[in-house]
Image (cartoon, rainbow, N blue to C red; front, top):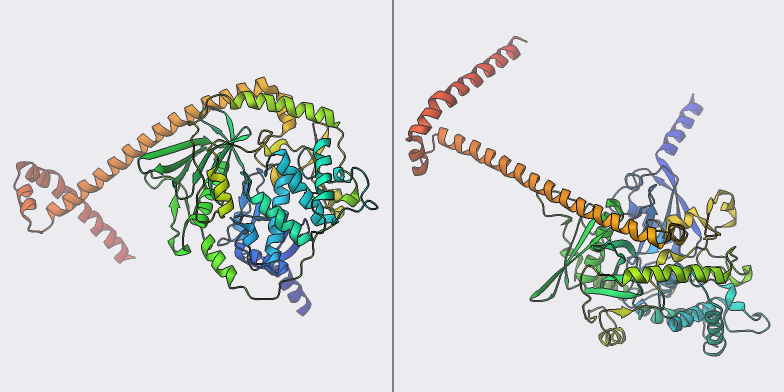
Amino acid sequence: MMLSRLMSGSVRNLEREYMCTVRLLDDTEYTCSIQRDAKGQYLFDLICHHLNLLEKDYFGIRYVDPDKQRHWLEFTKSISKQMKSQPPFIMCLRVKFYPPDPAALKEEITRYLVFLQIKRDLYHGRLLCKTSDAAMLAAYILQAEIGDYDPGKHPEGYSSKFQFFPKHSEKLERRIAEIHKAELIGQTPETAELKFLQKAQMLETYGVDPHPCKDVSGNPAFLAFTPFGFVVLQGNKRVHFLKWNEVTKLKFEGKTFHIYANQNEDKKIILTYFAPTPEACKHLWKCGVENQAFYKLEKSSQVRTVSSSNLFFKGSRFRYSGRVAKEVMEQSAKIKREPPEIHRAGLVPSRSCPSITHGPRLSSVPRTRRRAVHISIMEGLESLRDSAHSTPVRSMSHGDSFIPRSRSQAMDSGDGTALISDETYSPSDSVLPTPVAEHSLELAVSRQINGATRSIEEEKESEAGTPAVGDMTELGMDSIVKSIGREAALSETEQVNKFVLSVLRLLLVTIGLLFVLLLLLIILTESDLDIAFLRDIRQTPEFEQFHYEYFCPLRRWFACKLRWVGGLLINK
């Protein structure tokens, strides 16, 4: 009997717990058992304790729902209520708010984790830059991972065995090796990582977590929120930039996302874009609300609950629950402890950047063919980019209290339509698979894209909601243009439907208010209140007729029913 009770108790305890696996930035995994009613903050604190991380406000936990829509785990809500899938849950630790000046971070462990995130951004095509900058960034990664160049250890073409970017060229690989051999000798991993962060922070796409959208003309675009403001990327250019102090409101309804801004006192602008799904649009809105609160506000006490729409209580409500950037930096300055030991990934195989000791990443598609496919797609996208945009390109300069002086000067020297790279910005261009740990190779499910394998885990982690290049190649640019035209027509129909619904909602609310006011007026006139305007109403023939022919019979009917109900209750 005692044994059965113990077993039943242990079973109940197991039912109240579930397993969570969080993939860290160095591609290791942290697995733990969590109570079913545990909130996101509990899991996040466990991970930060595991990493010995104090400057944790820059990081967050990301997960993907069964529809491949990405989400940030909300720390104030229960984990099980946020996840749409069944346990065990798989999530990822990622940088959620990029530091405005990563070199100014207090602890080296924080800089190292940000370095891993930006290296991942570089590999997945989110951090796009010109070829000269790309070679320098890759050389810093080489120096940090393998140290000084050694002819005995590093044979000819050794840089080609690293995968820094979605696509490589032999010329770029030679340039990376030249910089590594000649310019970075003697730099420690810490110094190389610091130089990498300082270089990356100056790029236009630093801190960009792209959200694929379309403008009102149907042209593809990527929207993103950075430490310095809101950006729109089309083609290989940044076509819009709004500083955080210029953005006044973010709003969404269905698939439509609106950005309201005051560029000057007398110049108000509204940018409108269309997300692929309503869920993607809501995620975009929530990311914007959180980033604006984090970078713009002085104190977390200034954070307010925001609504996605002003239309009669309709829409989502959301509130950022963390600290703001200024509070984080002030808190970081108070950290006084011995620097924690850092276990660098080094030569350990990585999903985001494979190690030199594990050979080159192979692809069944020859490099020349991949390059030709890439060029054909770029030409097609360039033709789309040359058509009309949602709003005219404006000239502007960066300026923010968080922007380092060197970056501010560099930004002020350029115009608003900044050339961000030699190629079109398209994070989904990567057709390379994400390697998985050896113990999970049997579980990896992959499919063929343009001759190269692409794992489902890779799609969930970085490509959810964005079209793949292989799919675009199969469709052809003509079909893409037609589909964009159809989607633009559908978006116009959706706008008309939303307008009609808004008018109907307004009509219903107006009728309801009038009905409530009429009831209130009847109650006041039939009361014993002795007010001048009520006496005047009571003395009118219309009121006397209403009182004797309608109100009095109705009152007697209600009184009769109430007495009848009261009698039934008393008899029982």
